[in-house]
Amino acid sequence: MSKVVDALNCKCPSCKKGKIFMNGGNILLLNIPKMNNRCPECNYKFERETGFFFGAMFVSYALAAAQMIASLVVFWYFIDLSPLRVFAIIGVTAFLLSTINFKLSRSIWIYLFY
Image (cartoon, rainbow, N blue to C red; front, side, top):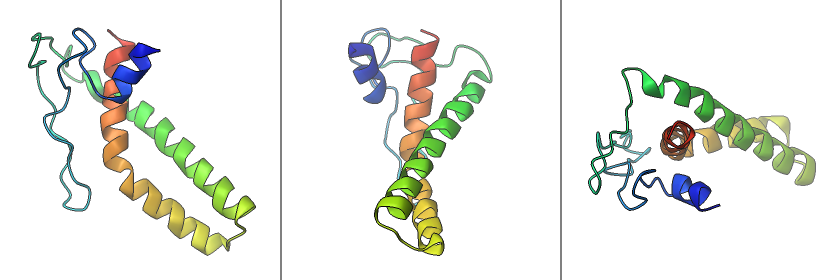
């Protein structure tokens, strides 16, 4: 369970102290989070090889799909909004959570191969 918490907090898989990302990014300013090449605490290299994070796109896709399906169920079935409003809410939700998905997908990908 501690590995799941560390992955969600974007901590180094080796020492559990260093941060994977330098900053959090800001979706409203169109800044993506900046990632450290190595852990500032234990010098663990995050990118194992060139193109290592290509697979994190699939994790990000799965996270975004789960969030969109959850939004659909909540706003269409439980709150009973019109399909156009639900579509707009899903689009805004996907946009606002994109930086969080970016960070989480890379962190989960690193933990899968640690």
